[in-house]
Length: 311
Image (cartoon, rainbow, N blue to C red; front, side):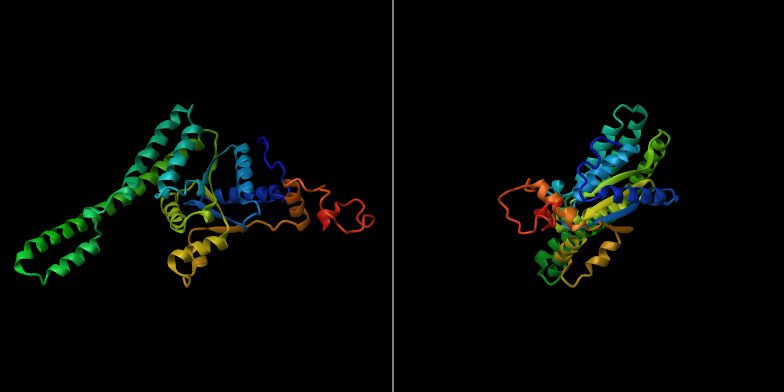
């Protein structure tokens, strides 16, 4: 077992992790043609981050490569895909820094991600959207003849913008497929290097991010990383994440159904036993034996039990 794995496990999360590892291992052996996305759902304060970090240690002890991405720490970035691919790049290079055979595969992944990233950052032609340019053209149709040249110029720009948009769409579509092929080749390569497949990608704190950031990250993952041999485990407070989606799309938007399109399965962490959870909190803040607290429970009835904890 990896060092410090499940140390101070007051909420019995280790048993849940072992159940999920067996489940995900079985799923990955069923020759799925795509990735698998598991949502770990739990309310704030029930130990999602502790669970993911220790799950990472346990998976690594079983010879899996695991990438951990803290979405909230990267929330400052306007483009979630850049931060996400950067984390993958850094992790893969760290994993295989001494493996010369793996380097070309990693470089191929990064190379094929560049057109997608460039597209995300590219500025719109002339600073206007195609619809805005069209409105400008329409407003010029009734203008005097002295403005007809301007109208023709804007019309040409609109036509060129449409052409460039179609070319860009085709380029990105091809780049996504190239990116996926590079990822497939890399996974096939490392499967021959005595490394257990799948590769696990753990995403934490997504529900704390800006709504637009969280939604876009989920969208990108679903489209870009839908590759056999990858398993995503995304920890969220699903109720809170639903509220974030409603903040973007409106209160009447069916956010829970919308979330289901991103996740193949949802697993809700067990609510801790109240006694165990109380012990965890009191122990954490060093007040298990604090004499400042008066507890009126009979000391004979609770002879071998911490009375304050029981209360």
